[in-house]
Image 1 (cartoon, helix red, strand yellow):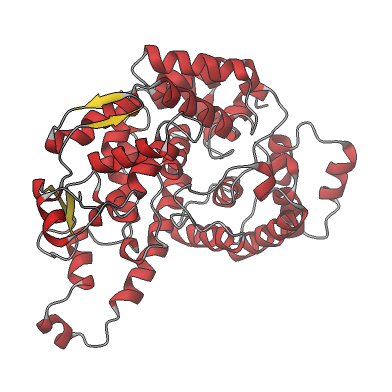
Image 2 (image 1 turned 30 degrees about the vertical axis):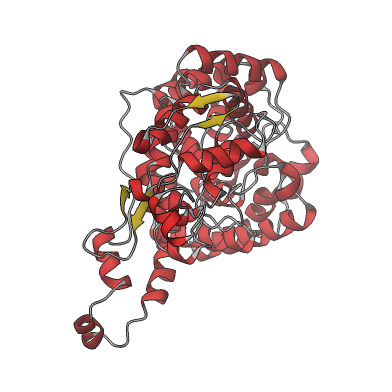
Length: 443
């Protein structure tokens, strides 16, 4: 019999129950979770299903000879296919992971620092960003993660910093060009201080000035996405943000700004609350947010130390599930019941997730996809989940002991609920009811 804490470790902090996990969790579920946060833990590399960047660029920007040799090739359609393969690889990684808590943190921070394939120039590329800027840094200092994100070319392309030129720079004065404030604004509002972080529009403008000068050679297939600093594009002079004066420092100004923002108390509060909201409740307890904030400020913003606070807090181990499974996580949890991790399984999860309105790696705004319960937990959404789960069950020829699923996810269910599921006409229908139930859909 799996203990309540082991169940919560797998479902609230992981990707759901999987047949091989109880043995790994053992009788010390919190220790199992903490091992996943350790710097000694080396998770397996993520699955990849598409070529490396140079091979992709050879397709996106073919030479005249290559066009002549393959006139039927449609590079745009190829990258549309790549966008699906990126999602499939991410799902397969989650289905196979030995560190599901760490994988949850990858998903969380990808949305926090989102880039989106809705921008055509990022189509078929977002796996590079997730695997290079996010995945290696989700348990260390927040400043390290922030730096990896802000030094990654796809973030600058997504938020138009590639076209931002200081008006008083050499190039700005010559061509009458100006600043794009998108990255400066989202850096303050979404990535660090938060919308209530105390900044003003003048701070956004100053941040955008400090971020000028960075340029990506997008079209060069020999040096794809090469990111460089050009002083001729950088806004000169002193900048002031939240009463802090930054002297002219050229290429180093971006890191000067990131140092300041990562160490700010507003950033500590914002990241702490957002993490607690992601794992515990849409309205997380104030005391856990305060404790996480204090640890952030005392421990150099270490994410693993903040998660230690979360794992120690009693609210993390209350049996009543409050956080809704986002569609992708829901599909992964459903197929984890059967221990499936094939490409065919990933395709089914991706298709179901998109049918539920969750286009992973394709958020509609820089805010990323919301994780709020009222967005994803509605009667219509649950009915659709039931049908999609039944379809996945049939398409993948799933076979399992119904008693196991009920003993895991329905341990606190009423006799009537259990009787309804057991009384379903077929196993396919029974699993459709399971997948649409609050017992399954709420962590």
